[in-house]
Length: 488
Ligand code: ADP
Ligand code: GLC
Image (cartoon, rainbow, N blue to C red; front, side, top):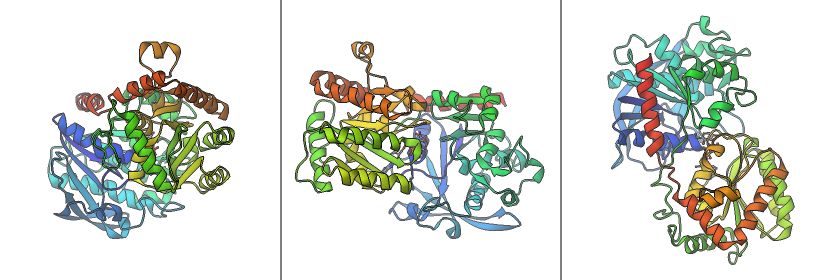
């Protein structure tokens, strides 16, 4: 099975969130299951600045964009021990920029950047030679690929038998652009209708992918159900419901080498289940030193690592801090970056409770590992969460997740009810309503459980033993690819 993975970010090249983790690790998992896999990503400045073994692939071509064309230079990265091939599409005008998608606001030419990228991926597939079996497209940035395959590249020998799979990582980001950007796509205006590429007068790259893909997946079974209704579908629920026969939810796996507390180079003292206490203490001491505290305190450490945006329930975290920080029951550590409003509100909270609320604004991969290792409890109180990876990393690092019952959080965290504790299956604390009282109650339950050492050790052990590797989910993707090829 020959598979081309097409994604706008992938670890270790460039990352803004969980998509990069998935696009970085899934290709290796598929390769391990016998697929012949290539990954294509943009050659951002970030990707080229990391000292990775990236070199010209000797492939260059012009990509039609609107009435003109733009040059694509293909680079290749060969890393030892890696089975999947990695290609990077370079065009300095479009990708040699300080960030992936823009700063405080999106780059004004994001439509052009990812129209170019999507078409370049197909041109590259043709030049690498066929036949390809599956083009696996991630999020709106690769949303045009299924349409291009069907409308413009269907008769190319390399792609004639290729089938497309569109994976949704987040319905809230749809790649909506003004209608004139349709001209850049090279696709005929007749497709700019509500049935295909148009969404309330705009060009929707995600919708285009969902309409033209042979199969659709999203990153958890619960989210697959939620997006077929409002508000989860963000306006595309009707389309998704009409395609329910082609829509599958597959929970994300994690890279168990990169996220392994027993070998993690970001930790002062790597640990396993047997010495989790000592490992966590060392991580807390290192974190305290990094934050400028004389020593770690003995209160449970409650952490949040993630994008500081409404989706992630920052308002609920602020309310919980307001209620709990004054009681001395917990120490909070927040690592994230995102919206100015959220950042400012958290700055105020940190200033109001010095020594109890620590805040680091910024994106710091190593610190994310250290925080998960140091934390006793990890908060994921999201309004919606397609899958969520931080609760998976938290579990592996013996930090107990407190999550809202939404999307992938439902599928990956077992609430510590008396029955689940008796059955030995509990891995976290779950609350339902998206309100401050729900989070406070669940966090209160977690802190009470933390006082009971044997109960806490049991929860931590359960969490650490969960298998979130790609083993099962990788197989599900392969089965889906096979079904997709057989069906169409
Ligand atoms: P999302 O993709 O919605 O942001 P996920 O939980 O799927 O949420 O993935 C988030 C990923 O980004 C995780 O790997 C997390 O550790 C990482 N991350 C988020 N914010 C930061 C940050 N400020 N510094 C370092 N890593 C971060
Ligand atoms: C998105 C989602 C997150 C998911 C990630 C990787 O960014 O918000 O829930 O884990 O993609 O699939």
